[in-house]
Structure formats: structure tokens, C-alpha cells
Image 1 (tube, rainbow, N blue to C red):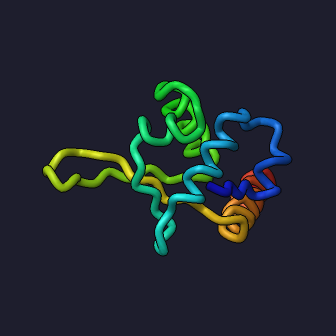
Image 2: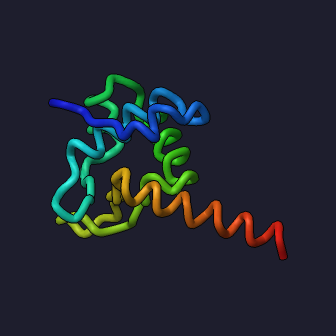
Length: 108
């Protein structure tokens, strides 16, 4: 499997290497709607870490707005999480908007 990690994420020193690697795994396994449906256990097996490390990395990525966890139901009608993965253009747009809002808050 070939992983692609957006350069803007690689340069961000506030994200752990696990979070960056997890983003690459999610990005490589997303569908045409940018949704990754792999479980935390499946993702942990792909990147070679413990499931709890994936849960922490998902939390970090979601706090930064890089990945958006969404609740859905499985085929067996059980709660499961899927993840919307933002690409570089979406990330830049989102972070630029946040910076503008922060600047506006300081001005007002």
C-alpha cells in the first residue's frame, strides 16, 4: 500500500508521527466521498501500533479538523465510526478560514 501524507501535515510539528502515519493510512483507504470506513483495530494493524494509539491519534487529527469522525450503523445495525479525510486543498481552506476568524476576533 502506498501512503500519501500531505506536505502541510508533514511540516506540522504539533502532530505526532503516529497521527501523520494514520492520516496517510486513512487517505489511502478512503472512498470517492473521502470516507474511510476502517475500524481503529484495522487501522492499527496497517500502521503497526496499538489500537489505543490510533484512538489518540484520531482525537488529535479531529481536534485539528484534519479528520472528521462520524457515527454510523454497521450492517449488523451496531454503532461504528467512519472518518471523513480532508485533502490538502480542504485543509488549507479550513485553516485559512480559522486564521481569518482568529484575526477578526482580535480586531473586534
